[in-house]
Image (tube, rainbow, N blue to C red; front, top):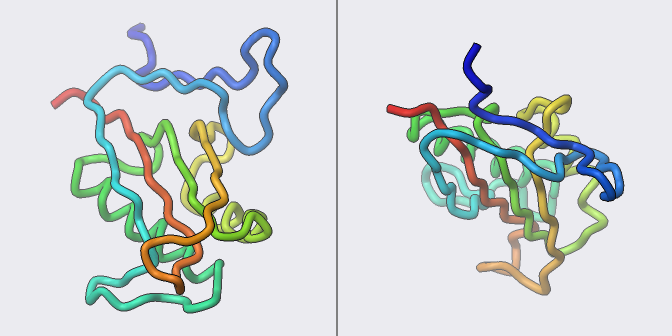
Length: 135
């Protein structure tokens, strides 16, 4: 049986167990880098002004469209980087994330609180790395 294309190592020896993310995700295939996605619709209009849940849903919808364009999906994501203007949004935005990813095998993740994003009405931005099957 061939080795899996993506391997999740949730509890490396000597590292505190993770909650809601995987410490190490190893992939074998084509790398896709998804630029930071923001809560803009196809016409460039902001979705969910002042609403972290609505913005997170649009961010992940956009990310799903980018992954599909690359020939992949959320199961191929090995790393997410979150930029949030307030870490108090995390429970809400993580609940939305969990609607899109396999919570039993979550990607590696980093969360950074920032003073501001591209526009003052943006509450979060998320970028991703995905490992796709060989073409």
